[in-house]
Structures are given as structure tokens and as C-alpha cells.
Amino acid sequence: MIEGRLLPGMVPTAVQEIVPVVEQRQLARDTYFLRLACPAMAAQILPGQFLMLRAPELTDPLLGRPFALYDTYADDEGRPAGIDVVYTVIGKMTGLMSTWTPGKDVEVWGPLGNGFPPPPSGRLMMVAGGIGQTPFLAVGREALGTKSYGLPARAPQSLPSDVTLCYGARSRDYLAGIDDFQRAGINVKIATDDGSAGHHGFVTELLGQAINEGEAPNLVYCCGPEPMMESVAEILQAAGIKGYVSLESPMACGFGACFSCVTRILMDDGTWDYRRTCVEGPVFPAERVLFDQ
Ligand SMILES: Cc1cc2nc3c(=O)[nH]c(=O)nc-3n(C[C@H](O)[C@H](O)[C@H](O)COP(=O)(O)OP(=O)(O)OC[C@H]3O[C@@H](n4cnc5c(N)ncnc54)[C@H](O)[C@@H]3O)c2cc1C
Image 1 (tube, rainbow, N blue to C red):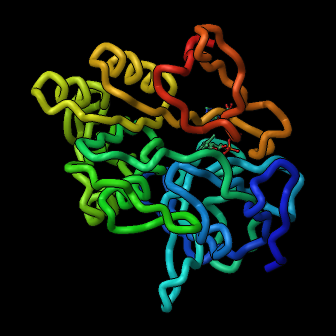
Image 2 (cartoon, helix red, strand yellow; image 1 turned 60 degrees about the vertical axis):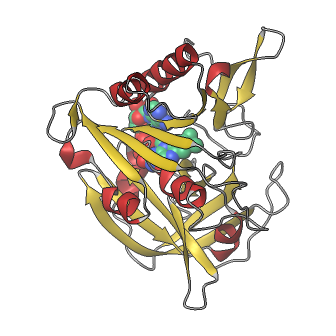
């Protein structure tokens, strides 16, 4: 392992390191759990923040790829030891990642981005589509007060009365990590496009149902494909519920230098401007994101 070094534009504590893979296992169809030994990053990272990953020995793929914090893990003395990510194979880098075995050296940099705000009291609902469930294990654990993240450790101001994950996937074989969420004490509601598990239909319909049945959440966090996040933002706006979305815009550097991940955000005066998903995001207030670009 080489000593972590600061990248330009990064917050003073972010690191870039070569770290070993500790564990890799398949969780669901095309979906893997990857554990990396990176204590410096694990000690600081917050739910909703992300890290960049690349293979240090290769120039193809040259650019790193962003992955959300799934969770941190601790050593035998309870000190932060590393980071877990969960990813779906869709292209070059994720295909390569699925071949990594324990001991493989990987380049990482982070923690990056803003993360989700600590949730207030009341009902917190997390709405995820596709691989968008990955940020919500750490969000849920922090919200339930069973685990702390950040340096100094961030504590929720008051615990939510209920933490629910509404998780939508194409079919049951793509559902990844449900046991992790349930073991953490998070209520899990499933929707699948083909009806092979849970509600037969879109995950957004579970949010609509909760609102119609008088169990509207006080706050919604959302991550997934853009059309799904746009639909969630519309439902929240109509119901007057506060929400945040975590964007998954493709990006090259992850720390604000390349501007490849800009997205259109509404300003206070009603005009819009570009904001970088990697630095000012990836989490934005749902009502501020202009999805129609
Ligand atoms: C903040 C953030 C957090 C993320 N967290 C996770 C995570 O926890 N788990 C996970 O599996 N993925 C996550 N992603 C998405 C992940 O970074 C991409 O899946 C990954 O970059 C794909 O790399 P690749 O080389 O395998 O695919 P590529 O070969 O680069 O691309 C294959 C195809 O997918 C398209 N594509 C690539 N990236 C995206 C994207 N972000 N959105 C839409 N289309 C895309 C390309 O245009 C191309 O058509 C996150 C993205 C962001 C921005």
C-alpha cells in the first residue's frame, strides 16, 4: 500500500491510495460485493459519498469510475478498516472489476461528493431503482442510530420513527443485498418490473401507495435511473414532501476538475446553472434538478 496523497481540489482529508481487495463475492445477477482495505477513507466517509476506482496497471480503461459507499467495515479492535461497494457489471471497468480477487491492488480516491444530509425525525423513505440501492445501507444504519460515519463521527439529531427502503429491479434475480438491509433493521418493500418479487410494477408506485394510504414519509432519499428519479421528484412536489436525489452522472475525475458531470440545477432566483455532480452533488434537493437535458 502506498501512503495516501491529496489531490488538487479535494477536501484536505481525501486520499488517493493503492489498496488491496479483501473480498469479492456475487450478490445477485451481474452484481458483486467488493471489499477494499482503505482505513483512511473508511474513517471519514459519509453515507451518500462515493469513491473513484481504477486498475493502476492499465491505461484501458484509463479513467476511474465512481461507486457509492455501501458500508464501512471495522478491524478486530473496532477501528475503521475499509470500504464495501456493490456494483453491477455494465461495461469495461465493471466487467474488469468482477475478475478481481483478494490481494489485487486497486487505485482508489475519495471520499468524494457531499453525501445525504443526516435525516431528521419522522418517517424516512429511501427509493431505489436498479443499482441505486447502494447508498442506502449506510444511510439507513446512520438514521437508525446503529452505526456512525465521518470524522468526527456524525450523529443523527433525532432518530426517524421509521426507515423504509422501496427497492425496484427488473426481476428478482437482480435484487442485491436485501438481507443486509433487513438485518440492519430497515423495512424493505420490493417492486419488480416482471412481478417475480414484491409489487408488480414500478418502485415509484410504492411511494404513491404510501402517500395515498396516509403513510406519507416526511423525507425521501432517492437514487436510480434518471426517469425514475424525475418521477419521484414529481410525486414529492405534488405531495409537498421534501426529497433528495443522488445523481449517477458519468464522470472522469470525481473531484471537480474536468466538468464532465455537470447537471442543470435551479437557482434561488428561478434561473438555472450547471453544478458538478462530483463536488456540489451527487446529492441535490429533488426540486432543484432539471432532468430534461
Ligand atoms: C456518484 C456515483 C455513484 C455510483 N455508485 C455506483 C454503485 O454504487 N454501484 C454501481 O454499480 N454503479 C454506480 N455508479 C455508476 C457506475 O459508476 C457506472 O456503472 C460505471 O462507471 C460503469 O463503468 P463501466 O466501465 O463498466 O461502463 P462503461 O464501459 O463506461 O459504459 C458502458 C455503458 O454504460 C453507459 N454508462 C456508464 N456510466 C453510466 C452512468 N453512470 N449512467 C448511465 N449510463 C452509464 C455508457 O455510456 C455506456 O453506454 C455510480 C455513479 C456515480 C456518478
